[in-house]
Length: 169
Image 1 (tube, rainbow, N blue to C red):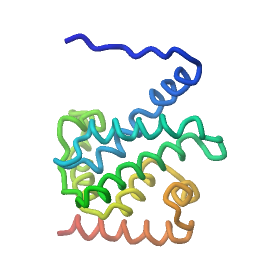
Image 2 (image 1 turned 60 degrees about the vertical axis):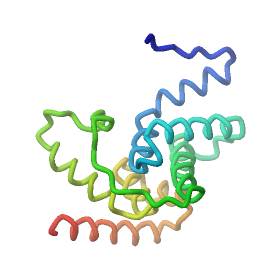
Image 3 (image 1 turned 90 degrees about the vertical axis):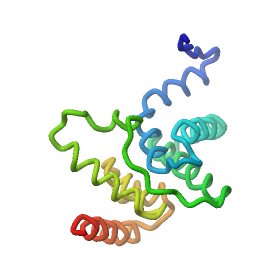
Image 4 (image 1 turned 135 degrees about the vertical axis):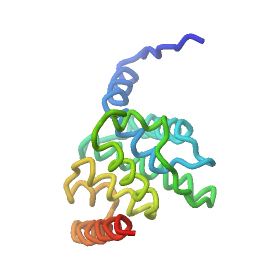
């Protein structure tokens, strides 16, 4: 089967597709952390893209593009579970996530363990640590999650403690 290339017909579509190409890996990372058998990675990814498309004409550029994309992606993934009343299962890294980690990378095992531990966290904690690992500032994390900067710092400290405790166990 031949893969289709999507071509935009108007400037807004072209601009949107350019934005999606630029942030594709970020969107996949967010979706990956919320993947479970009831929410396959590609389904969540498509939902996020659809929600980004619906919201794109209303984006006023009052925040950074990355902040806006994270907010939509996280809210889409979290809303899926609220609507379905599903609790995300702990998932392990699969071949679908190989784009995150090079197979011959010497720290492969350590990263695999880190992602397994992150998958055991609650939704909000998972979101916060994901943003932190993406080098987002506390201010950006606060803006994306709707928390205060102080609350982000406190939660992040507790998340790190949880992860350290999990590592020891």
